[in-house]
Length: 206
Ligand SMILES: [Zn+2]
Ligand SMILES: [Zn+2]
Image (cartoon, rainbow, N blue to C red; front, side, top):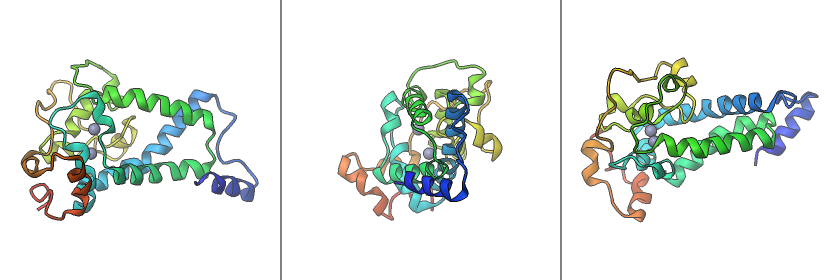
């Protein structure tokens, strides 16, 4: 949708905004960094503001982490995050190849990030949203879950002071919505309607 706007912007400025001449891995890394900044802030806002929390709570409603959880999101959550994250990239005129590399990495990473395996990822926990780092984000206790918002690379959590991980402290055993879990609907349609129910998520956002 925004790619033609990016083209128009580049031709108006008389220069290409995206560094198409850089090596492909560097372009892909830049794409991830640009992509994740708006995603980070949308995600952080979703944890702070009750109406957006209801949209995002579907992702946190799982009582057990498993690899398919990375795709367990409300369609509105997907739409909001994707529009926010792709807009700057498109306006900059990113090419197909770095986007394809980023998408391939994201697919594999999302499954590992949510997998129910005791993966020992060592120093990678500093740089990536690994299963151990992301498990804190799924804690049922809000003071533990309101952290580690970056979807893949932890850069923006380090920059904005929301990185939570200590190798000597075990991640939480339990995950989910905590006190709000009992009233969370089980059915697919029920979960689709959660964002429109102001009675939901009251314990987390009184
Ligand atoms: Zn979240
Ligand atoms: Zn998650």
